[in-house]
Length: 248
Image (cartoon, rainbow, N blue to C red; front, side, top):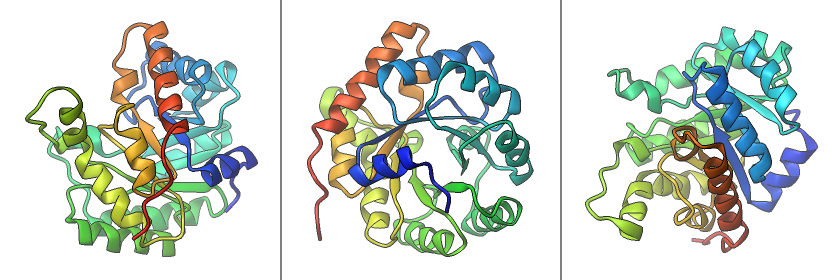
């Protein structure tokens, strides 16, 4: 693995914040807003669609590490040549509404194909939440064996909170928190807890063993850049105040 020093330091501190603009978000203005909010709000790195033009635009707006996401390994090559620092297989959330599922065998095959194309770049892989927890753990272990450097969890899109306020936020984050707890104890690489998180549940992700969090819709659905910056800052502050991981 060839991880940037800044990312290695951030992962070692267990306070990583990845801001996600969306795997299928190719709107330059919206991506630019998310990148700017991440930069000014103090995020650790950004995650954008695997598009060379978006990578070049993002590089003009920030010095933060740039991650690109896709489910087609071929798309990573041009994005890396354009300046992407790391790559992510996933974020699958945007596909579930279309009825598209990613099973364990397919995610593992994508990981192996990506590693064959790009053997040295830092590789993050999302474990689909549609799998049972035990199967998520098994897949995470197989992904690490296949060359994944970071494992990301998900689950917020499938959660249906029955309460408002703080309790609802915890209910929303429960699937990805549970996955982070189980996977972090089964692999020896950093785990990013993503999907459905907020400043209330970000500290729980760290306490459950995650090295950091990934946040997308809470930021990329906003229309006001100032509000987006404030949301990023609130997440950074929540992570800074997070307790150390719970040990089993």
